[in-house]
Amino acid sequence: MSVVIAPRHPMIGGISVSLREQVQPDDLTVVRRITESSGFFQTAEIEVAVELVQAKLSQGAASGYHFLFADAEPPLAETIGYSCFGPIPCTLASYDLYWIAAHDRYRGIGLGKLLLTESEDIIRRMGGRRIYIETSSRSQYEPTRNFYTRQGYRQVALIPDFYAPGDGKIIYVKVLE
Image 1: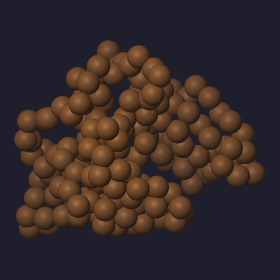
Image 2: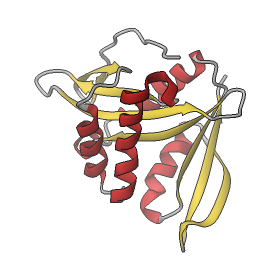
Image 3: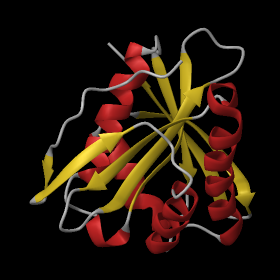
């Protein structure tokens, strides 16, 4: 089920942004460009991000993936961030936030917060009651973990050495009101 949000043009860091849920073929390149720009993700992770876009394009709603893109209005006219989320199979109302990323040039202006807040609203309208986020325990991800905490997520698990020796998986949850 896709929930269409009313067209809005919020201002983020002096940039007018349009939000869209519709995935377009060009988003394969867009997602690659955004995730590569961050310097956080390994090649295999970037490929997974692109594969999720491909799954949505080829399978539609059956893919289980939902996207929210932030498109900067002219004169920039480019997609500057996105999120990807979906219901967790075999749960009543739990969702995973698989990806949230802003192009490196647009980090620190509130884009991540906008994408997260709007994604939460869509999930809530789709009947979601809990959102889970997984991230790395590496020190590079400390700003990411702090961001989730500031947005009301709480850590519920740490699995040591999950991704690699010394690189654990941290799981956060937020209960939606």
